[in-house]
Length: 255
Image 1: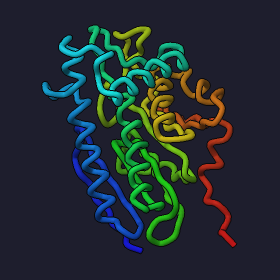
Image 2 (image 1 turned 120 degrees about the horizontal axis):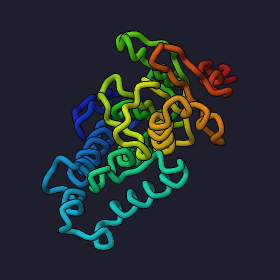
Image 3 (image 1 turned 90 degrees about the vertical axis):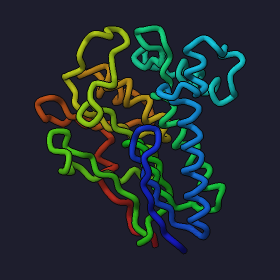
């Protein structure tokens, strides 16, 4: 079995992929190529992208690609599930689906890696992480939660056990998340929230919504079936959901 790890800058963020498997080079190249294509299609910063054409009124959603319609549909579903705290519509009337696209793209990338015959992988797209199997040493994959006040320090090591994990916060990318119910309100109560969910897309959507809710966000995650969370507030106090502690332990050794 081969193991290979690469990092590239795509979609305006660092993307790290590590794969352990029989044909790692082909799987890596296919994964990165797919993500470059996603960026070309969905980037609001590229004038030639499909989403830019939609926002300029040159392309109707009904005539857009199946992928674009799927992303919009996911966004609308998440808006309903979060009481409007997740919304791809911007206050200026434009649409920015990047809050869906990141988790959606990495979930699809993971499927591509598995289709290439590699069951052991770790995909990290700007803090949204999908993983499966074991690392090159046969150990469980782990994720470090950063101290938002001292980013070179890890405050907790999490073992997601194959589930998706995503962190939303303002400490690395600034105020890129807003409360759709009060767009001008600054979100300063919570500095980061990490969510574990059924897959990376679901975890990312709920982490974004929970962050937009401020201090109420961790209670929202507590009440979601199949999700756990870890929030750090502006004073540096951490609040965990009742089941999050299970992900701070490794599994029993396989017999």
